[in-house]
Length: 480
Image 1 (cartoon, rainbow, N blue to C red):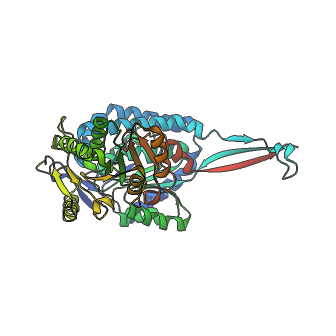
Image 2: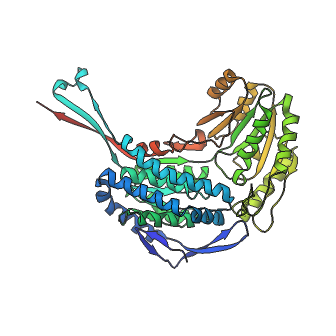
Image 3: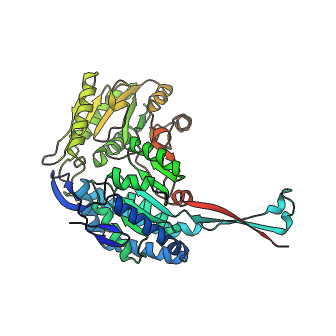
């Protein structure tokens, strides 16, 4: 039985869940789950620990993060295999995720020195208020207090690092709710942080339901900020409740990212990158290229090459070093994907299927030819390996199709005409537009997030998280 981490103590609770191995479709391990009472206690411990932790010398907090990164590096293979076992992410990709998480901890330890530098202002340049010539005014950044971190299932290590490392760096205390589908990696990372010297009470890792752990985090007035990654319906619900108690929010939500391919694009590059962008981790990434829009002059050629690539994808056991695509996270997702493909078929889509895995929650990578706006897969976020390919005539129609959903996370444009790419980049509603590269491109230290129903509040990123989860305070000194 895997315990929860309650303020640094490992606690086995009466309630438990069975975490499944998506690659086998069988139980992996039993995990203790927290309820309202444990969550409330964790928040109280974090609140009590905040005064001491926030007043630690910055060098002491950064040393903890650096030691944690060293321990993670030594245990990287264990972390990667744990991540693969509970998420179904191919082992090669799991290792990349763990490496990113390690870098995030180190980056947080480095960047915080710059973010917390503060500033001084030459107020003697202002006429009002009178007497500015004898004043010195400076700004400092101070931590919020207790931050609630609600994680998605698809990045249990990297999302933990994004939400925990920058907050600890600036002096916040954190209560983490990992996904009940992939909680084990988060518990391991919590153990590692305490092994690295984190003071008791500063961090709790509480697997549990949204109606218990999640609800207490959202409603408890001691929680001053919430950082969330997950679906749009859950994110908007959390945000609407959180603001009623004055909480700072960072909501990274869904996406239906378009990939736009023009007739003058490097076809080989566009096909290769867009297949990877859609089918990496079985399409279960918020910034996966979920809709492929191709100019009509090259549509048939692109489609043929794309389908051939998809049919050659190696689908199977995520622990196998050669596997390119593993299972989806659950049996219910398989059913949802089947319904989405059926909807596409009844509305004029031609279905092309690749190789299917066996023994777990596998869904064959699927391409929908002649995709149109009547189809569910072109309207809402499809979190799985289904790629609709639609055609367009000119750049204006491409923009209309790209902007035809309520989401706006990222977008890609493939063209050799950089003036056109820049023009379209201004027209497409998205948090980032990537030219001649993947929608999956992300810099962990830079702001990441979307517009519309893809994001609410501040963007996620090492620096932007630190800025969002601290308060700027002006201090004025009268020197007369």
